Length: 354
Image 1 (cartoon, rainbow, N blue to C red):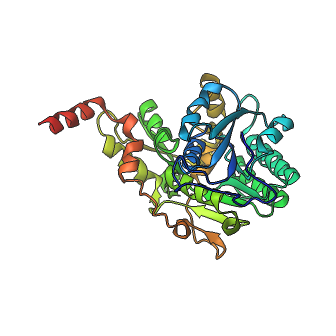
Image 2: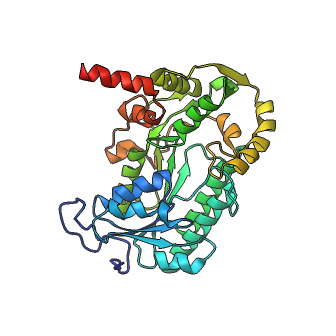
Image 3: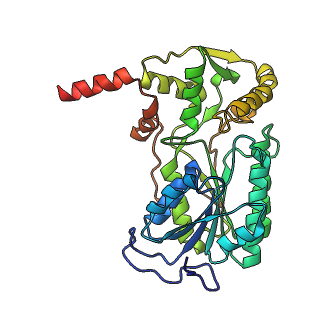
C-alpha cells in the first residue's frame, strides 16, 4: 500500500467529496479488524475514503470480505502476530493512525482474556512510540475498574495506562455493551433461552445496562481517525440513550420474538454463580472454540454497565453530533432477526401479501 504520511499524523492531502471514491489522505492500521466492532470500523473508514491496513491472524477467510468495504486497493489485508514484532512494524510503518480493537471474552489456546488485552496494548503502543505515530485509538469498556472481580475489566484499565504512558496523545474509547446484527449482547441472551428451560439471573437481573449501537460507536471512531488535533489525549464515553435492567432487556427481547421462547426466570445467588462460572466456561470452551459465554460473565453481571456522569474533559455522542439509537428501535429488532420464529415470519409475510 502507498504511504501517505510524512512527519506528523495530520491529513497530508485529501480529494473528493468524502465518499467511497474520495481520499482522506489518511492511512489507518486497524488491529482486531475481523471482530464484531472491527468490521464496522473498517467499513466506516472505507466508505469515506480512508486507506485501511487491516491486520489479521488465523484464517484468511475471516478477513477477505473486508476488501470490498472500500474502493479498489484502499483496503489492504496483512497477516500478523502480536508476538512477531516485525509483522506489527510492517503494518504500522506507513500508518497515520493505529486503532486497537483487539480483545476476547474467552481464553483461546494462545491467549488468555487478559493477555489479549494487555499484550496488544503493550506491543502496539510501543511500536507507535518507536515509529513516532502520535495518533492512537485504544478501545476499552465503560465499566472497567481496578477493583472489579473481572480480570477483563481490570486488564482494560491497565491497558489504558500502558497506552497513555507510551503515547500520551492517544484517544481512549470507553463503550457500554455494544449491540447490532450478529452481536454478543443479544446472541448470549437468546442462546441461553434456547439452551435452558429457565433463564438464570445473577443479582435478580437488577444490574443496569445501557446498550449502544455498533454503528454509532464505529461512526465516532471514524471521526476520531480523521481529526487528530481535536481528539488527541481525550477520552470518549459512549453509551445508548436508555438505561435498563438486564431483566427488562431480556423480557423485551423474548416478547418481541415470541413463539417457542418463554420467559422463565431463575434467580441464582452470586455465590453459587461464582462457583459454577469457571468450570462451566472451561467445559464450554472444550466443546466450542468460539463460545458465546465469557470467562468473566458472572462478575461482570454483578456490576452496572452504564455511562454515569462524564468528567468535564470526557466526550460523549453529543460532541460528535450523533444521536444514538435505542435498543428497542428498528436496529435492535434487526439484531434479533436471526432468532425470529419461522412461523411468525411466515405469518408476517402472508399479512403483507393480503
